[in-house]
Length: 136
Image 1 (cartoon, rainbow, N blue to C red):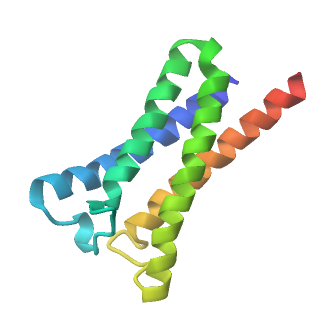
Image 2 (cartoon, rainbow, N blue to C red):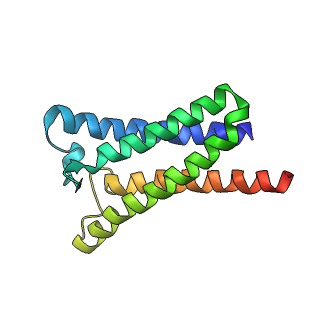
């Protein structure tokens, strides 16, 4: 179980760094990073919401790494937050597909990369929960 929590921590950290960079550039410069259009949700840049979701997953997973008895709670929280993230980022990716703007400076748009992180976290969390049920 610890290996799954560590994997989730690494994925959440990567998502946090990525969304943190995007959020920081937007906050400091007022423009979106990597010369891409900046999607907004409820008047705020989408990357700020992504940063908040990755931060939440980072925190709960870090707590689980520090104390194994919180692992199940962290895994379930990561599963739920990553599901919301999939819906959130997936919505923007679908809009980009409709506008043919899925490509970006890094090959794909930043929303696609965010979606990939959310999907990876969702899969690892789902496998961990499935394994928990196997052992009971």
